Structures are given as structure tokens and as C-alpha cells.
Amino acid sequence: MKVTFGLPELDKMLKEMLHLNSLIVIAGHPGAGKTSLASKICYENAKLGNRCLYITFQEDKRKLFKIMKNLGIDLESIEKEGLFKFLKLPITFLEVDKLLEEINDQIANFRPKIIIIDSMNTFLKAAKEEEKRAYLQNYFYTLSSIIDGMVVLIAELPFGQERINLGDIEFVADAVLIMKHKIERGLLVRTLELRKARGSPIIEAEIPFSIVQGYGIRLHVSPIIEELPKHEETIAPSCNLLEKTIGSMPIDYTIYISYPPDMRPGEVAPIIIALAVANKKRALVISYRYSSMAFKDLVINILEQFGYDGESYYNHISKYIDFIGINPFAFSLSELYQKEIDLVTSGNYDIVVFHGIELVERTLEPRYLHKLVNQLLYLKSKGKLVIRLGSEIREEIYRMNAAISDIVLKFEIPENAQYKDCRLMIWARGNPRYYASCGEIIECVRESIEKITVSRGEARG
Ligand SMILES: Nc1ncnc2c1ncn2[C@@H]1O[C@H](COP(=O)(O)OP(=O)(O)O)[C@@H](O)[C@H]1O
Ligand SMILES: [Mg+2]
Image (cartoon, rainbow, N blue to C red):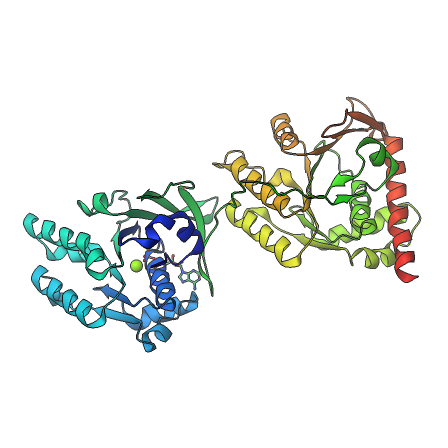
């Protein structure tokens, strides 16, 4: 590899270009993140030993160094090592011949592998006549061969303007990256559009990203799973009813539990908890509805209903189960999924429970299903058992969730019936459907709670 695009995901997507001399255009409105991405490219290349020359008319060196440092990009350190040069041209250089002479001098002396021009708009101002403009464009086009490396041209799009206005440059560029930001439901949503990439197939053309303090640009590339590994491990169900209807299930299964919007079957909590505790697996419960206090109260309540000392058993349960409440509306969907995957990975959980999924079902959001399925496939590939619970707010949503699950448990209350007349439809891949009565469900809860309490006895013994 000759150069890097500064972010591993981009390197993967543009891998054919890493070995060639290339001309890259980064375009976007003010504040889109162009300078941040360009600085990251500089920084990561310098760390590989590629000298980077940053040419600008407008950026202030001290300010840039300070802002980038907050994003984990330490330009000062690479400058000290002689791998970075910040060149601020005085405005009097706004004349093509002078400009090119200066750049050529710098190339001869500093011998950069990477050149960043921030921004190209100012440079083009230097060329008033058409002829000079063409000359300048041609110069930048050949520049990557001259330095045998990568040239990054930043193009400022004024607010309200969507077209890059660099003349022929965008046609001869090897890759065009457009950085966008917009407000969606009051949240800042950033996307990086890969509009053109010579020699590389564009798989994911619009990548959501965020700019994070201390970290910098973070792309939320959906993990694309090409082939799922086979997991031999199985997990035992929590009660006889599930043993009879489902049996032992593969550890990478996805279970969907659906209930009517006017029903909250808290009974499923012990069934899920027993799954983790009795199998000695660690579970993370992510709730879009409850706080950890509300979850604790719910569990203690149910245990007490069945005659157990809820408080003391709760301590035992917390050795296996972690709970986190997340407000799904505080994040864009891509950020939310990324955060969840980070949580699951960092805690090394075996089981992930998503509670209140009806709040995340944004069928109006573009590519919702695509993002969800990618997240589930990722968890599957890592051998995580996923349990998703939600109110059936629309038949269509129930169908979609059922279609992407291996096991479906659907609570139903027939019209005009009492709560106690509820029933549970149980379906598992490869098995016929089974309708359990409420009595059978209560029995399953009782057995589950027994498994939880017995396991504490074992742990003590
Ligand atoms: N420390 C930081 N934490 C989070 N976001 C930051 C931080 N520093 C800058 N940003 C964000 O980065 C963006 C500026 O990026 P910049 O690369 O200067 O954009 P451009 O060059 O496209 O105008 C701003 O929108 C700002 O919100
Ligand atoms: Mg900028």
C-alpha cells in the first residue's frame, strides 16, 4: 500500500486506488467536515512515513492545529518529525504563475507524497481568464504523477448550491467524495457520498458518519456479512413449554416477541432472564422504553408475585444481566446501531435483548430495513442470541420482524376477551406453530423463576 485515505473503511472501499497516483476531490458545504477529513488523510499518511503538504489561503495554522488535536489528529507531532508542512500562501500569491512556482519549489524541497489544497475555490480565483484556468486544472491533474502520490482538492460548496464548480477537475478526478450534513428530526445527520471511484466498485455509496470529540471522523459502515459462520453451540430453553415447541436453539438465533399495544407481558422477563442465568450466559438488555430502575422494579415485582424475595434474587440476576436504557430519538439510526454494536462488543455479551423496538421502527427512514438486517446479521455472525421485543403497532411491521427472525412468540388477546384469556403463538424455524394458553405461559414463568432461584443455590454450593 502506497497511501491511505485515513480511514480503514475508506481504504477498503477505495482499495484499488491505494496503489495508484490519484486525484481526489472532497466537496461539501461549510462545516461538512472537509478540512477534518483532509487533515486525517494527512495525519494517517504521515504516520506511514508519507510526507504531507497542506496548502491553504484561508486556514489559520494555530486554529487548525488546535481544532484537529481535539479530533485526535496531532498535526504538531507530525510536523516536528518533518512529515507535515503547513503552507499558508499570502493572498498576493493569487496569480497562477507565482502560485505554481511556489508549489513546485515546495515539491522539490519537501518531496511530499500527499498534497492537500484547502480550498480549490480560492486557487481558481487566481485564474481569471479561461485559458489560465484550464492550465491550472491541467496542472493539478498531473500533480499526482509529479509527486507520485495523492492530491486532495477541497471544493467549497456555498450554502444553497449543490453543484461542484471546479470545471473539468471533477471529470478527471479519480474519486469524488461529497460530505453532507442536514438536520433530521432535530438531529445533525452527516453523510459521505462516494460519487465516483475509479477502479473500485461502489457498494455503499452513501455512508453516514459522525465527528466525535477525541476521535475525529467515524464512518458508520454497515458491516456487510458475506458468509455467516456456522455456530454449533446451542442454548437450552427456560421451560417445558418451550422445550416441547422449540427445543434447544442455536446460539446465533434471532427471537422476536410481539404483543398487542395495550398489553405489556412482563411475564416474559423471567423467561428471558432464565435463558441467560440457567445457561450461564451474559446478557445485555437494551431498552428504548425503560430506565434501569423501572426494569429492576418489574423483575422484583414478578418474583414477589411468585412468592420469592425479589430484592435478593435481583442481585443474583445482575451477575448475568446488564441493563441500559437508551433514548432512540437522541441518535440517528446509523449512530444508534453503531453504539449498540460497540456496547455488545465491549461487554462481550452472549445474548442481546432489544426492548421497545416499535420505537425504532422508522419505516419512513431510507434504508431502515437494510440497516436493521445488517446489524442483526453482524450479531449473528458473532454468535449472539438476539431477542427483540415490541408492540405490534402495525400488521406490516409484525410481518417484517417475523420474516427476519428464527423464532416468533406472539401474544394475542382475542377480541372482547380478558387478559387471562391471552394466548401465545409459538413458531420456530422448522417446527409447526403452537398456540399456548395463558395457563401454560404462567407455568413456563414459574419454571423459569425456579431455574433462576436454583442456579443461585448452585452458585452458593
Ligand atoms: N471537537 C469536536 N467535536 C465534535 N465535532 C467537532 C469538533 N470539532 C469540530 N467539529 C465539527 O466539525 C465540523 C467542522 O469541520 P470542518 O472539517 O472544519 O468542515 P469544513 O472544512 O467542511 O468546513 C463542524 O461542523 C463541527 O461541528
Ligand atoms: Mg474547511
